[in-house]
View 1 (tube, rainbow, N blue to C red):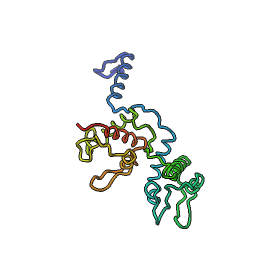
View 2 (view 1 turned 90 degrees about the vertical axis):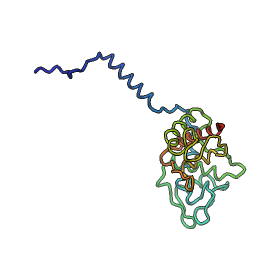
View 3 (view 1 turned 135 degrees about the vertical axis):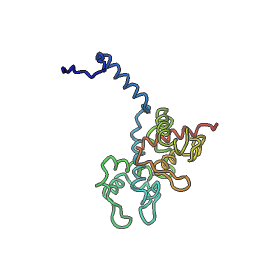
View 4 (view 1 turned 180 degrees about the vertical axis):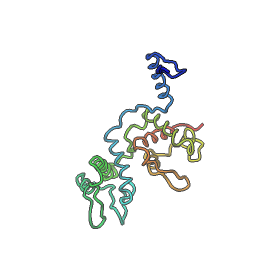
Length: 229
């Protein structure tokens, strides 16, 4: 039997028609998925500080305490230490320290960018109390509509279904709408590290980048400014 090269019952369409169908299918698939807004780039200096805090919280807080407050038997206090120069901070991070308050050398583990982030953050910690800013270490403006929208979509996908409810209300976990008492930095830290106790929450610091967590914070701060129905 002579082979025609066609499958029985299949209609061959002109190539332009096939192209239009493919484009239509791609557009349909694209619009059916969750699309995140194109947000303006993060400010490099703010992004460096935010990344430095996150890295400090992962690597250093067990010895130096939260926000560098220090632990008597482990790492020394880093808060309000203006006598520490940037060069000293960098050298200690890279080379470590022997003897009392021994510290491992991180220069063999971290790359230059990560060390720069830590140096920048510790540089903020060492400032005198009267010069320290209470502003959150967010890498972008938390009022930015695109960032809030990205946070909303991430919240709906990750947080709303089981724990926090639609628009942060009515779930098993605490509500967020109308919560003006939640500070931005506090919110970031809870999402990043999680929380134990009666309101247990898993840590998301290994699942999301700092920027994505800050977008969640932007959305939760937005909810906090909304009036309860």
